[in-house]
Image 1 (cartoon, helix red, strand yellow):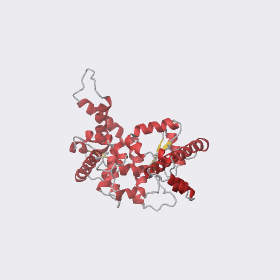
Image 2: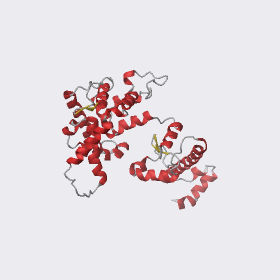
Image 3: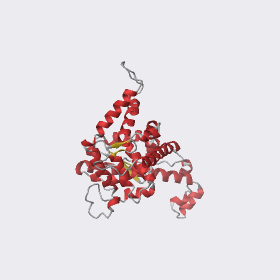
Image 4: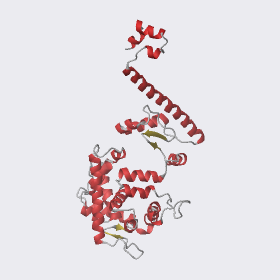
Length: 351
C-alpha cells in the first residue's frame, strides 16, 4: 500500500500537472485513511491527557489544586476498558504513576473515580474536587452495591440539607426527608452512647457462640482459614446484637449468603448490566429478599414504635432500639418503600 503511494504513474503526474491538490491526485486507500485517523486520535488523546496530568500534578503539589487523572488513549472512554478487565492492576498502575503521597483519579467514561491512600488525602479530595461529596458517594453505594430503587434514590440525591441539626442555608428539604441527618443523629444517639450496652451485648453473644462451637476444647485447634473463621463468628454476633436473633433463625444461611454477596461487590461496582453479571445480582437479590422477610416477620411480632427510655434496650425481633427507631422513622418518609428499607438495612449489615 505504501509502495503504491510512493510510485507516481503517468495518470497521477498528469493530475498534478492539471493543478489538482496532491491529496486528490494520489488516490488513497480508505483503510489506510481510517487507520491513520484512528492512530492520530489515540496518540493525540494520550499526548493531551499526559500533558494535563503533568500540569495537574504540579498544581496539586504546589497550590493544592484538583488531583491528576491517569493518562489514557481512547477519548470519551478513558480507562474504562482496563478498569473492567483488571481493576486491581489498574489501581497499581495509578499508584505507580503518581506515588502514594497524592490522590489521583481515573476517567471511566463520563465518571471520574479517585483513589486516596489516607484520611488526609480524602480531605484534600473533597476540598479540591467540587463534584465530590459524601452524598454523591452514598448515592452511588446505595444504587450499585445495595440495589436501592430509583424512586428512593431521589430521596438521597435530593437531600442537600447536610448531616447537622440545622439545615444548610438555601436547602428546602422537608424535615421528614432529611435522610442524612436522620441517619447521622440516630447513629450518634444510639451507637455512640456508652449506656446502651450494645458493646457488652455483642461480647456476650460472641462468647456464647464460641463456647457452643464443638470444634473447640482444651487443646489447640488448627483452622485452615483464619479470616473465614473470624467471619463466621463475628458477623452473626454483630447481627444478633444489632438486629435481633429472629433474622438469623429465619435465615440459617444468612452468614454464608452475606459473605457471598460481599465477594460480588467489586463486580457490582463495575456497573455491568444484569445479563452480564447474573451471579452478582442474584446474590444481592437474595440478601434483599431475606431482609424484607425479616422486616415483615418482625413487624408482626414486635412494636417498632417502642424505643423510649422505659422500653427494653433489645428484643429478639428488631434487636436494638437503634434499629427500631430507624425502621419507625423510615416508615414515615413518603418516598421510602419496603424495597428501600431493605436496601438500607442491607447497608447497615455491611457497615
